[in-house]
Image (cartoon, rainbow, N blue to C red):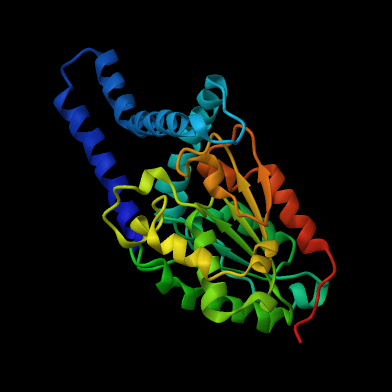
Length: 306
């Protein structure tokens, strides 16, 4: 569903460019080129407002404050990466790297398997650079698609359980969950609904709004409202969790996160919370520090399921 929606956005953008080229055909060349460029970089203007809003919200947050130079570099980085993810990988290449469950995977090499859980307005195509590496290293993995796109986060738990069971059958070991943004909340819901702590080696969350995000305060969709700061849904999720569960988590957060702010709302009390300086929201999923930490966990000794 999301892939088709984003394919429609790409088609609309191309149609707009074509309409502009036809309408402006008698104008000077620099105006024609400028109009096309303006259409192609319109997303960067929207991102700039996100970064400015995040900086204002973060003015009282205890996380290290980003400088305006850091924000400008993060904005540039996200402006380049966003079209790659939302206009190419997700709409057209979401199945480029299929799930890997073969007998030559983790069960043979002594490595844990992975379940990748994407965030809001994303699909498994987000993870393509990761999935390419997983294939090269013969790691067992499943990357889910969370559908329906605008459904309740509670309804995604069954999808995660099915994915975890597939990896468990292939490896006989607890899984590593790697989660971006809303995906970390989906992992927490799955742990609550299935009391699945013993089935997890570790949970890595990247820019997850554990405490909500100010950007969702006026959302009109179910999962958006659940992610608002101070939402009853988030408060109930926290009440339902034992303090010991947080020890399963490593949470990456950044003061240049343009989607999840205030910054420390991406942390969990009792978890290992790691600050990434100057890294924006989507780029956090590909931060070298995160990739290296996950690789280290995969290369460690496996603990078999009872």
